[in-house]
Length: 84
Image (cartoon, rainbow, N blue to C red; front, side, top):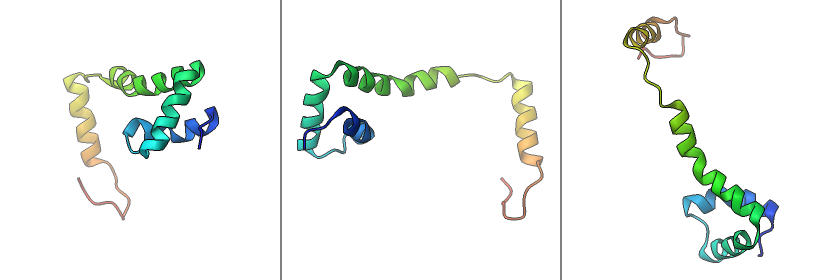
């Protein structure tokens, strides 16, 4: 099977996680090497986790963290939830 841009997108997560069969991985890499659009798409997928980590790496002020922890601990629970 020779991947197309569309089928390559469907395989992208498996490709990046290293779980594609070797022949499919090679075919996808060959397609990406010759397709500038897919190469840019793969690179953006590779960078996404780091971008999200950076964007969400926030330290709450201590008083806000304590307030939030207290609220989470004391919040009303539905009957099917167990306490923390």
